[in-house]
Image 1 (cartoon, rainbow, N blue to C red):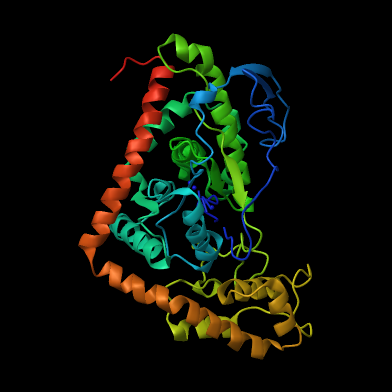
Image 2: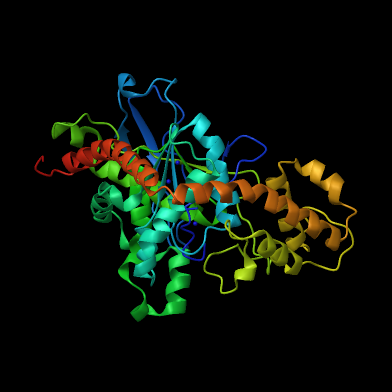
Length: 420
């Protein structure tokens, strides 16, 4: 399972989605798949495509990669692994919850899941050093309050597993600078801030995101539509490292050979992947939006929620309907109601199609208050017991490190380093 937002869509890794009413679906929207469909062959031929990461020339190369032996493949009974995380910046809002965290609750029952607080990503733009530690703990508490079960999932802080940064450096040596320069969101952010005000980390954070994912040999990564480009870079970087250092080259150095990294697939939800702003139905709900009116924060009081819904932007059409491109606010608010009420889209359509906005806003506010109240109560219980939270995070980091260290040692070996 590693999550993104105007902060480069990283509230992923948002960084990553919602599976509310139906099961996960896989999307083949990336430019290539990891290997050919015939897994029994000793070698698979694949082609790397650069076309979808950038708008410039396409580079294709045919390469032969040694597959792991059949005995090295995990048995079908082993759960697939998912990683995901959210940044500890600003307030966790309804978009983070419905777009990522709520979905994790169902994923933890089916997959081997690791959910972490991506604090290293939080420093790529100016931030409050006095608040980072507190925000990190509070974000972890929200994970647990929302229903993450530590008997099923590992919860930890990204910076507590040092392998994230080590692997990022190793991957950076294999990541062409042109790949990073073509990242759309970096170009947008750097254009607004100016080169002198943008740190190198803003350019290279997609490599850290790749490290977050590849370190745990992740099978699937929950992503929103705005993060697919970053996952595609992760996939291509995994393929590149597998080609440069894996296979027979790795075996000659004493390794097991085959692929160093699994190439992860995207997991995109059927609904609610992007919860939009309350003030603009065409903009994603964001922590960094200047107006707090644009979002419902998970810890907002009842009165604040009612006030924000009462004042949220609507339209002058009669009745309410899904999927009308001329009514983005209507579609967004109906979707939010569907997700927090637990009803199907058809049920919401029949219930609300003849309502006026005044009636619906009362209905939506009540549903939000009812849904968020238990989370808020549980959150207050967790933050009041610091020893419990510390224990959860320490245990999660220990479990994560045991997985990450195996991958990291394999990469060091395959890249020719003197063994530690």
